[in-house]
Length: 67
Image (cartoon, rainbow, N blue to C red; front, side, top):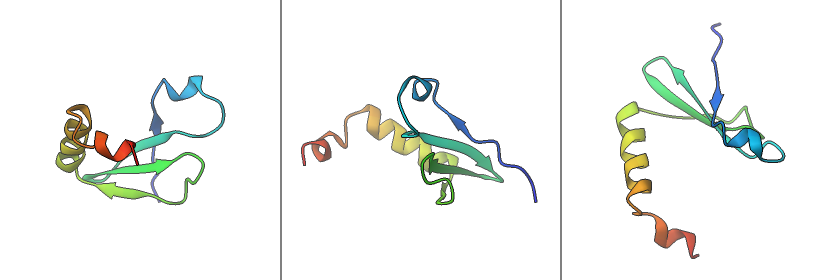
């Protein structure tokens, strides 16, 4: 079994508790998990993650924050 090297944002280290998202390379995919629930991992492709991040930066999901 190989070791997965999880990384979190340097901004997360400044907050209290374990409320951060971690990412890791898992074969050809990207793994995402919450640090307070490390056994639950979601995987995606690099292209789909890039698309999601571009949408977030462009404000495509801002309307969901007001719910």
